[in-house]
Amino acid sequence: MKMAVSQILVKNMETRKQIRERIKIKRSLISEVALKEKSKLIFEKIIQTQEYKEADAVLVYVDYNHEVMTRDLMKHALQERKSVFCPKVLGEEIDFFQIYDLNELTDQYKQILEPKANLSSLFSRLNLDKPGLIIMPGLAFDRDRNRLGYGKGYYDRYLYRFPMIPTIALALDCQIVESIPFEKNDIRPSRIETESFSIM
Image (cartoon, rainbow, N blue to C red; front, side, top):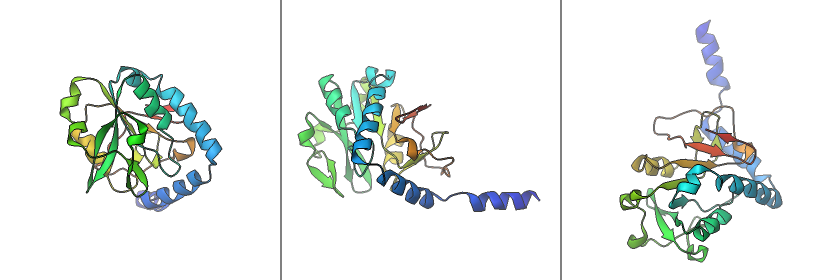
């Protein structure tokens, strides 16, 4: 009997691929106006967090394809004289490079704006003498902070290198699902912020 129940649960559980496809569709149906409004609400929450206030270095993704928008957050961090770093895909990895103006985001990886790969502006362990914060994207999350990315594992591998830096994932309410199948290399964000609630 126990085996039968277990088999039913496994059968009914969505695969990671199914969750990705479902959430991509839900997110794509949000209008540009609504996305801007929801992103603004999330931005206002982020700048009030202790992690953001204390951070001297902010590592933040550049939004793409209906992700929570991050341009206002980058501008605010620059105005607050924080060091802002954005990701660049380099082969099978990502690294973060410092920018001083959003106009520096000119390179492109699959139509995603990126900074120039300049060794002198690379975020490294030398930057860890001051508090940092990683603002990360994701496609879907659950309330245990399990994260489902886009399948390349860029952020999981990067966070493995810098486990001491707090992470905040940004998501829309519609990106929170009941359960995400967990894999051994997955790394959970420290917290998740949506337009309506926080998950910690």
